[in-house]
Image 1: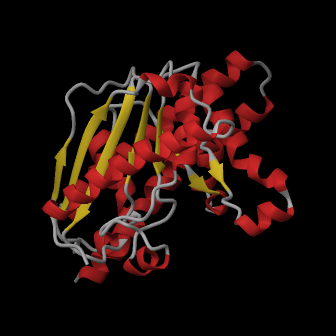
Image 2 (image 1 turned 120 degrees about the vertical axis):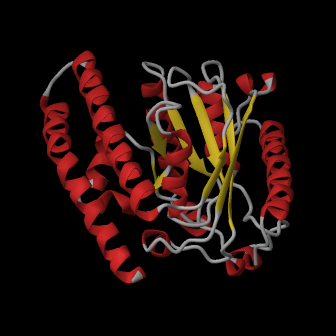
Length: 293
């Protein structure tokens, strides 16, 4: 029965998390108390190894137990020794594991832009914090209008990650729509795209501005589901319809290396034009890949 398969999947993921949670907790404690940048960097590298093993073990049982129908089209030129920014559309929590299937050990340990409330997930939230994932609070315009200092919190979180990234290869993942796609959300924001929400350029622009001279490229990922309403539970039950991932590596335009998104309006407009062009191409690709709602 699908429900039993889903329950077994949750048990397997829990056991995997608990198993790798032990070294995670030990290394996190040491990272907090041990002084010195070099020592903390060494511990961060060990934490990345733990996280990669957690990902690998989950992918191992998912491929054998769930046997998902996934088609992956990924460039051959990727390497764990590169600095990369990965941008993707977002439909379901399943997206994260589909990205892992496509990119695991082909590029460096991933850091996702995450909503701040995810830090409270047991063990996993601690891992996000110890691995220095950027947490986004996403304040409303009304909140920022009342307290303009709030506008800098997310930018400062991104800056911390980018400073750390200069010490070792990194892949920074960003679901640039900011939330999972739904028809209701698309209509509410009057998105000009059929299969996508409006992209948010700020985080992408900041990463490119801070690491543009060091980044080896941008990986533009498009994830398509044959099921118009995919869910992570359906995936864990082994019932998800075919999933297609198409990735392409983009060169970073020269003008981005010196652009200032937050300080120069003309650069902000240019970033928006660039990412909107990518989203137009992505929407057209989704149109050909599957029949979404």
